[in-house]
Amino acid sequence: MKVINHGVPTIMHKQLWAAASHFFALPTDEKMHVVSKDPSSPLKFFTGFPNEKVREWKDTLGFKPNTTSNMTLIPSFLR
View 1: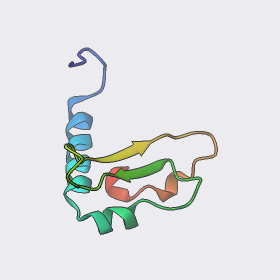
View 2: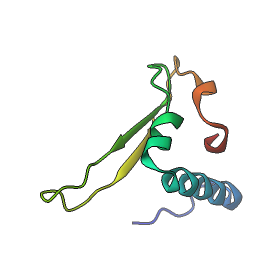
View 3: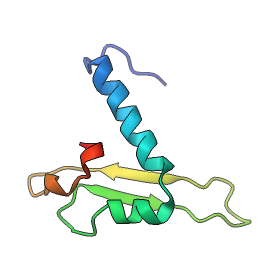
View 4: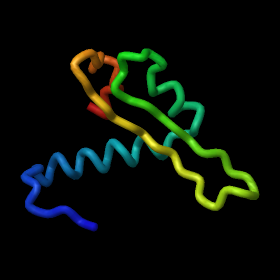
C-alpha cells in the first residue's frame, strides 16, 4: 500500500528514510545504546533473534510520543 496526497513535503520524506536507513544499518549493540532505557523516551527498539524456527528477523523502531515524552532523548539524526 502506498499513501499519496498526505501533505508531507518530499524533503522531509527523504530525510526520514535517510535517518531510518542510518539507524537500521547500525550494529544491534549500537542500536540498543541509541535508544534510551528512560521510560519517558518516545522511542522503543525491538529486535528478533535468528534461529531455525524464525523465518523473518526484523528490527523495529517504535515512536510513540505523548505529553510526558522527553523529546531530548531522541538522537539528533532521528529528530
